[in-house]
Image (cartoon, rainbow, N blue to C red; front, side):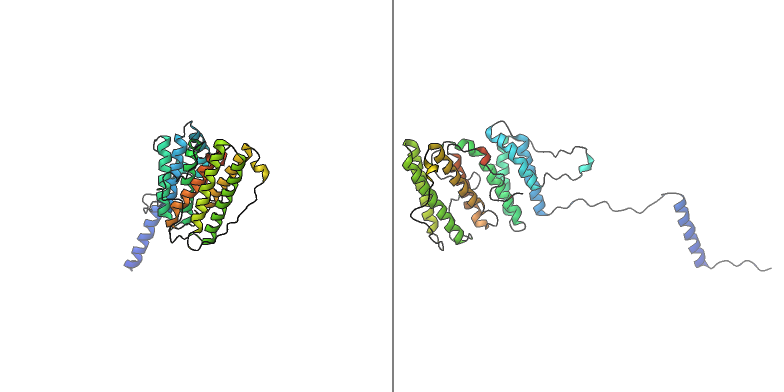
Amino acid sequence: MMAPMTPPPRRTMRLIAAVAGLATLAGGCSWRMETPPIPSRTPTPTVVLRDAAAVREQAVIATADSTEAGLLEAELAPERLEALGGVYVEYPSASPAPSPSVEAATFAAAVTEAIDGALADAADAASEDPGLAAMLRSIALSHAMATTYASLAGAEPAERTMPGSGGTGLLPRDGTAVDGDLLARLALAHDQAAFAYEVAAARAEEDERADALKRSRIHAARADALVALPGVEDLREPLYDVAPVDTASATGRAAMEVALELALSEDYAALIDGADDADVAWILDAAYDAFAAAAALPGFDASSVPVLPGLTTS
């Protein structure tokens, strides 16, 4: 009687492997391959800067007090925070109500950090994300406006630089990247403002008249300085139209003057987007200076403080 044939060793090994596989499936998950963990978010440098700005806005909101500046910032900071995309929460589903921690600080300290941090981070973001850099600079300017407008009421006519900007002055230096045509139009706007203040002074009396003449001289001097820059065409004219209704009463004159200054502030602030690093400081100072002039006038209203000066928001 012939002995049963044994399978070749290779076939035997295949059968053993198959049986082992079936046993593993039948017996449940007695072992498994380790899967790599889900990688955590690795933000880009500009995302880190955006997140840092959002946290600073949250700190302003958390510390806002009952002062005029605090109440205004309580309205504006949430809009800036929304524009930044909110505070980043890594695992929003881990808690039913995530609340990002904000380092405790006084309102004044939070605002100072918001201004200084925005300007420093804007310089870091400028090469990689010019849009973020512009937003951060606009945020810093808005903070400066919101927290100083009340203290400027009734202030003497004078040139002022933005808190935290470094105070480099209100005029571009040689080699500015700002287009000569834009500078020519700014000079024209200053000259028009100087003329309007002269007309207002002619109809005013005592302190109002003296202040209007001072403001007229400030604008005329700025127009002269801008026109003196290389490549800037002189577009100024001898006379401009000033509606009689705008100068017939003290209230009308103040409203006209506030509108003139706010328009100039916005003209300067519009240069923030795309500004060369060397031009940023004087642009911020000039935008703030015109705003400060408006805030010093009777009838200025806090609702005129912009959320993101110079930028278009939807």
